[in-house]
Image 1 (cartoon, rainbow, N blue to C red):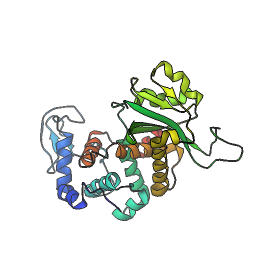
Image 2 (cartoon, rainbow, N blue to C red):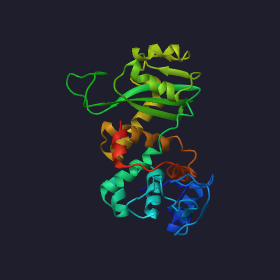
Image 3 (cartoon, rainbow, N blue to C red):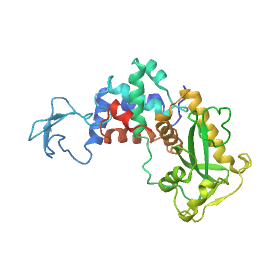
Length: 300
């Protein structure tokens, strides 16, 4: 598996190669703003049973650095959990759950569940909307069926809308989202969440975009010409489809948004490869523990 040159596995293991190093990192991040007991919210503590634990001075609760984080009760060692994060975020094409399970000696379902936890923190905050020139288009994942041409609704296809910043002939940041259909109602959320109203937005001539001009006054449309007028955007559509087919083979509609989050988390940080893993680990430390049940409940 090819690895991004900016963070070699040797460098990774020098930082996180032991249980003590991993727990020390988690402890520093979890309590960077001070200690607060999970049980009684007391602010004072003493040393816990284990090296990196903290014991509440009021109720006596002994809290580990992994408690109430996405590393809580992982079914394998903390060093393997950190290395799984490394594999997912730094490999050029990503790492599927089958490969992770074989590499780390766990069940495929265990690797899949942990991978879903990683995807949870890859969601965009929505705080950095696209600016300047933005191209928007929709596409489908799945095979067209007989009698279902163009934008016709089909249960066999997953519909996605993509917005990409265009900087000359190169892409800037990008976001995508699963949509139910190609109506204005379905297209609106990606505009409101991920595109600055001051941006110069260009779409094709699809009628679903027309009502959006009232909120996005600089929105214009032009003929797609089979993608020739949106080359940067359509190149990213092809890249996403190739990544999905090549790494994961198949993804159900239920979890497609999570795979989109993963792809564009990595894509939007191509110029920040040296810190992308550390930022991910911090997010996992600062996120509350989640269960398989909640993952299924909150899926698309």
